[in-house]
Amino acid sequence: MMDKIHVIDLEFLNTEEAIASFLVETSIGPILIETGPESTFEHLIKGIQQIGYQAKDIQHVLLTHIHFDHAGAAWKFAELGASIYVHPVGLPHLASPEKLWNSAKQIYGEEMDRLWGKMSPIPESQLIAVEHEQNLIFGETQIKALHTPGHASHHIAWKLGNEIFTGDVAGVKIENGPVVPPCPPPDIDIQAWKTSLAIIKAANPQSLYLTHFGVVNDISEHLDALSYILDDWANWIKPFYQENKAQKEVIPLFMDYTQKQLAREGCGKELIQIYEYANPSWMSVAGLYRYWKLKDQGRL
Ligand SMILES: [Zn+2]
Image 1: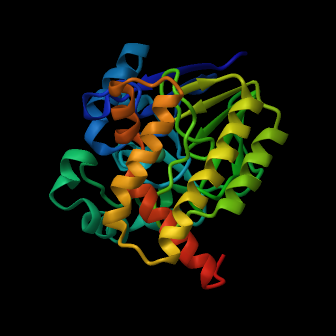
Image 2: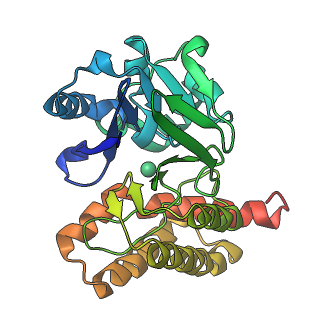
């Protein structure tokens, strides 16, 4: 049996094609890859219903990593009895999300609810740690975990047949724009990320399913472009980090630099704004500063 894959647009901040969730129909019922944040849970349920299922039909949820825009609504499915599959490093943060929540709260402040919504603990009995290259079996469907750090230390890309659900490790690409790397703190590791891109390439997929956003078929070209722009962004930030320039002064410069790159690739104003929503400049500046700092300290 061929597994049917549905892309659900979560309409994050009423924006199309910013955050996706994926429903896979298997012989034992629907499973979900990515939940999006709790703030878009209603959109997700609407999407699930349009495919012909109810929220409680989802008994297996696979997460690429534990960032809010990917895993924020996982606890809602756990409340309905679902098992949640996650990287072993991410698992404790879903069991007790206070630390995750509080560090995000420091960044987002009063915007927290509007952007991400709430996050409640998931009972450990419903959390399943998945090792590198472990196969999960759902009836006739097999899904293989590929540990793919670089964007986050707790990142998994999920391989189903010839398709790979890449979370954030294969970058962000909206509509016909170029691929760009989301670089939030605290885990960015350029070297590890490139190794992960090689793992994905070696798995020889036919399509990539990007959470931000949708299906990519020109695999080699896509992964090479991402590898190139990763270095480009990291190296652009490096001298500012070295001269200790305040991040808030660098953010507008970085935004200008990357938005000109997008414009050169043919993106209009509106599309550039969606890129900024899906992958904020301030986040990448913070993440790449931290990357260079950890490298300086010999911690990467
Ligand atoms: Zn993301």
